Image (cartoon, rainbow, N blue to C red; front, side, top):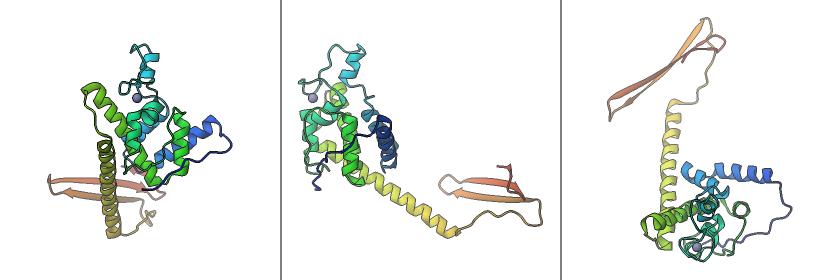
Length: 223
Ligand SMILES: [Zn+2]
C-alpha cells in the first residue's frame, strides 16, 4: 500500500481557479461518467446530506444517521464519520494516513488530487461513491456494509472498468490497423466524391451503412 501524505499547500488560488483545477482533473479521471458526476456533486456540496436537507427544512435534525454524533455534512460523510474512517483505514484503501476532523471538502479533494497519482485518486473517487452508496443502503434499507465490503466493491468495479476499456481500446486499435491510416482528399477531375462504409452484426443479422458526399472543395452535400 502506498503511503500517502497530505501536503500543506502554499498560496491560495482564487475560487474560480480552484474550480477550474478541480474540474479539469476530474474529467481526466479514467472512471465511469457516473462516478465523475458523483464526485462533482460531492465536492460542490450538492448531495442530499442531512445537513443540506435540514437547511431546506426537509428533515427535523441534521445529525448523521449512522453515528448520531455530529451534523451530517459532506465532509462528515466522506471524511470524519467514524464509519467512514474505518473504510479509509482498510488495507486496500489508497490512503493510510487520513487526518480526521471536519474540513472544507472541496479543498481536501483538491489537496488529494495534487499529491496522489492518477490511479490512487481514481480509487479514492470510486470508494467515495461506495461510501455514499453504503450510507443510502443504511438509511433506506437499514442494511450496513462492512468497511471491507465497500472497498472491495469499489476497487473490483474500477478494475472491471479498466479491463473493459482496455478491450475496447484494443478493438479500436485493431480496426484502425486493419484499415490503415487514411485521410480524405478532394476529388480530382470530378465534381463529387462519395465515401461509404458498412458494418454487419452477425448476432442480429443487421447491416448498417453510412454515405458521405462532398464536392471538390470538400463541402458536405449529403450525410
Ligand atoms: Zn457519522
